[in-house]
Amino acid sequence: ARVAAITRTLSPEGLAFAFRRHREKPWTFPLFMNANYFDSLYAGVMSFVIDGGRAVLVAGGRGSGKTSLLNAMLLELMRKFRMITVEDTPELAVSLMRKLGYNIESLKSRSVITRIETELAPDEALRTALRLGDSSLIVGEVRSTESVALYEAMRTGALANTVAGTIHGDSPYGVFDRVVNDLNVPATSFKATDIIVVANPVKTADGLHSTRRVMSTTEVRKHWKNDPLEEGGFVDLMRYNVE
Image (cartoon, rainbow, N blue to C red):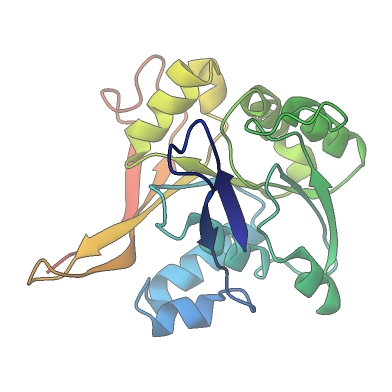
């Protein structure tokens, strides 16, 4: 579980906690299909994308299932490939994947919240991962200085292996805006992204409940120069029909 605690003086009434529980067993593509998070066609397409060693960003808001989907994608990699994960808050099911026979190494980087000085900064942790040799590279969440190092890995193809991570964003252009304008990655480097998956909650017809869905899967073409939205750089491969 992820635990957050606040105390005085931020919390005027004293100590308070927030708990976020995770599944004991990780989500898989079949489990997601049973929950209607996506369908079998999407599962086949994404399995093909992951097997092809593409660079994938999974975007969405809080609680949209980004990390769960990223974890399910890891299970689509063949066990013969080595994986390296870089997270500031460990959430991927690394220990369970190891028990299943996956060759996976977990790196813990410095949190942007706790800032423990003895831990490596996110960009240094990511560059260390690149020095460890031929591996698929998985970043738990792209949110700070590691983004530049991540795109260095994407541009070099990370030795033609899968590079994947999660990021906050509600659309492909929202991801572009965050990466380029908030995280200061050059627009030309953003072209190293191959696929953007957007997941978000969807309100039910009565408006009283919500359910999580993969909303779109978008390819990032490489011919644009300044703005991928205006220049046709985003091409939807699949889009969720709410009706």
